[in-house]
Length: 480
Image 1: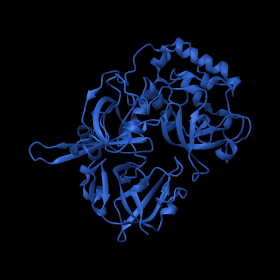
Image 2: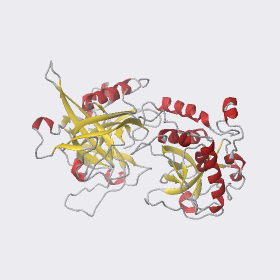
Image 3: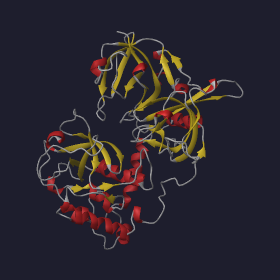
């Protein structure tokens, strides 16, 4: 689910501040005098080593055919992973790049010290660059790109410049820049042995100057503290406040929390939790939910069954890709352990008390969304069933993940105030396991019964919209 950070403007401003520790003599983010004095004798390998330069032109080239293309940043994932859109072929799939030769600390599914700094550094350079070129594992000729070990990302060298239409042989290598700033280890350069000496020299220099990973100092952006008992309701209230007031800072951002909740679904490596809270004065129950991002590793199935009541510990943070969520979960052990911070099953679906079971809201289609002045806030992040049958009149396919689609729907000819997000291959006929729908065109001009997780979406321009996220194919029933 692509949910943009509600504080995107503030986040980007933060990127500019973080990059103040960039290398001396750089055209992008020139360092100040004080930093120059601190780095007396510092060698700027990124801009001075002429051996690490691109050897062929990028103009008019298609990455998937030629292994090289001029791109624009679509989203930054972490310090060594970015997603790009080809400038000359914007309709094609995203180029999901895993930076070759470097290994930065984690900042998404798992979170490690200096991971956030590495992510901000890389994304900050890309945000400011006026020319970005991505190549795969060949830089002196054109060849099809090479996938990494996950088979979902392309091994990439990422070249940048602060000049528009920069000549290919003047671009500098961002992979090396991350190493030079002490934000990454050198991982494997066997495909570019001619780069090895420079990368290792830049890495040793970062150690000698005690930069970032090699400073011997704790990361001031990493939470080293203990987990704090927190309720999903308290976190939800902060999220809603941020939606109403984009200048508000979520007090749980970068906090280590311990929460309890009932599993309502699991899709696209995201675990959805819900909890109900009774008002002592009115007796009314308010429900709250949250996304738990499991990272690249799958979560053992015993934790993903609906009506399983869990306690888990993780890091609450605002994510560029998934909105406010819990990530870096302490652990989902297959076998029970004595570690109190590991995820624990407090009740199985067979033993869970009635008051903890999943609560599904029911609502009219036109009663959902921001058009009703946030009238649907109490249903955010909860399972919801739409009363009427809705009609699909269009949508779009995800540029980042194949087979993920977003649908536009209508009721009585009027556009519904939400979209539908489907993060998997949909099976329209429960008795036919072979036929799967892959694009929004498959859904178009069909009528459905609908249920799913009620959430929100912030576009790249910052516009707020609501969406219903499907957990599996049973959430969308084909009527006609």
